[in-house]
Image 1: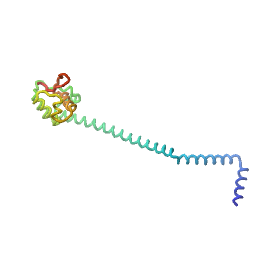
Image 2 (image 1 turned 90 degrees about the vertical axis):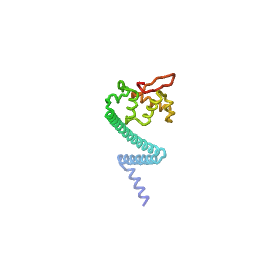
Image 3 (image 1 turned 180 degrees about the horizontal axis):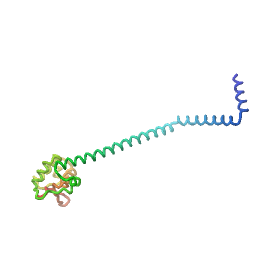
Amino acid sequence: MVRKRGLFVRLKSVFASSQTKKQQKAHKVLADWETVYQDLQSHPLTQAKIFNEQLLATTNTTIKKFENKLDNFEDRIVKLEKRRIKIIRNAQEIPLEVLENPKQLKNKKNESPTQIVKRVVADPHMSDQEKEIVKIIQKENEVDAQTIADQFHISRSNASLKLNKLHDWGYLSKRMVDKTVFYKIKGD
């Protein structure tokens, strides 16, 4: 019976129409391509490529999420800064333009160093360390960044930043001797 079937298949292929032969050939080519495709899919390099593509897609999605969060974070920081400036302005009754550009902040005319120290100490937005720095400067009359660094056990650069901040806000004046900058309360 198997022979009859094989014979029948051969006779059918011999007497088949040209269109049927084309279809059989197309089916054979398609079957060959499917086999090649399956072999490629199971190949380790193809598996690595598929894994890398999935990893890249996941990474790109994660990066987009981070970018969105950073944008939201920046917006929140801007809102908080505006709110902080508004609070400071209300607390000190200083115009907003002056707070946005602290270098424009000027001492009030005829304000003595003692009044400046009192204003700094009373300012709720100054850190305790900044208030202590101003008190030390009042006591010592003039200091450099290294003196403040030694006093508070901080780096000289950190002390210099704090002193420059107080200078920018108009509380201190500074002068340079050789390469050392000395700070004192304005008006002294």
